[in-house]
Image 1 (cartoon, rainbow, N blue to C red):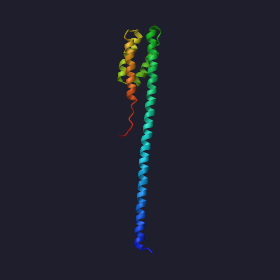
Image 2 (cartoon, one colour):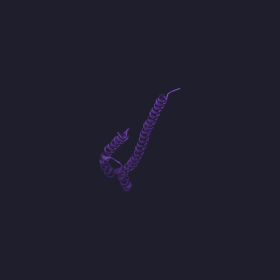
Image 3 (cartoon, one colour):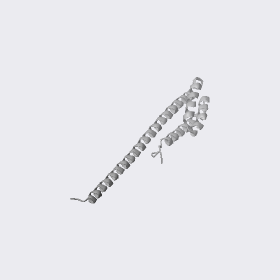
Image 4 (cartoon, rainbow, N blue to C red):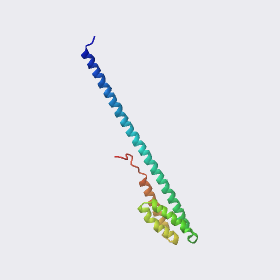
Amino acid sequence: MTSLDEQREANRGARHVAVIALLAALGGGIVTSTFTYLGVAQQFANQRTAQIDDTRRGAYIEYLRLVQSAYNAPAGADEQQLRISEAVVQLLAGAEVRAVMTDLTESALEGSETYTDLRAKFIEAAQREREAAAQVDYIPFF
């Protein structure tokens, strides 16, 4: 037979193992949930970036279509639609795109010779802006 002290020692060891196992399970759960949360947060950030990029791209395409139409036929251009599209791009675009856009609109409506250069500058600025916006922070909290 085992003595009472030996049984207490065995029970104490079993309790220590149980506490360690419980702490390990809690720690594993915390680590797993943290990585899951970070993964979901990253997925939402990627989706939001893609959605904003799609909106910008659509607005830029519509603006370029209208500005090209105004340049090709200044007398028949729908200036109101062009101004509305310009306002939408003003809301979505960064400073570099907005700076070129105003001159591009006026150049198209006037049939100016600088139109082609301004259009190229607008497209380059828009591409730079979209590339910069596509770089998402992969660890949003650190």
